[in-house]
Length: 224
Image 1 (cartoon, one colour):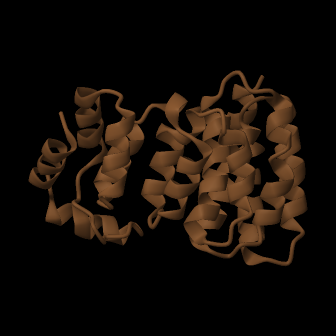
Image 2 (cartoon, one colour):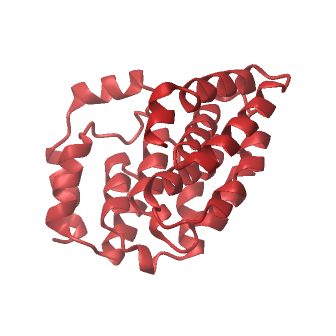
Image 3 (spheres, rainbow, N blue to C red):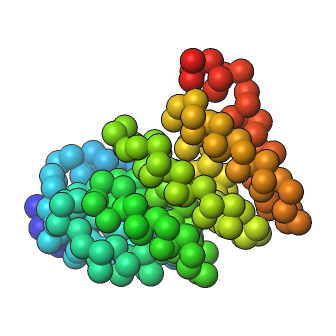
């Protein structure tokens, strides 16, 4: 299936009603078709992995085509330059999270990019850094604790960013790291308490929400 046929398929699946609903959840409606993620995943399964096709889909600028690109690209062929190019083009939190969780966290460059992007100034580029930390904590079952401990100072630094999509990603990453095991739970709680002392509404919200989950009975029970 080539890019022309795929784009035609995406346009046939367009759902204007969904576009309005997506906008209410903070998703950029520009160049958006309103196609659900399950439908995109079904299409990705039919297509299979195709690095060249993924580049064409991303270049289209269409919201759903970019999410689909993250589903069909080949992680082993993704370069740091491609990752930087794609992250500069992010304009919506859901594309950001899909790209990080479907593709970028499976590349060998993910760990360095997570830290590098967390220092960016643009909202969705910065979110990508923290989202990538969250997905690595969720998906990489073989990573060492020390790799995640290196993220913690960057989470503390990013916690004072008042922008909604950044602070939520910081919170998400902190919680995911703290749910991996008991040692990282203790480390995440320690950082959350440090964050709580910062003179920032975002930091106080991040810390309170993270501590509520990390110190909760459910999390503690799973870590025993």
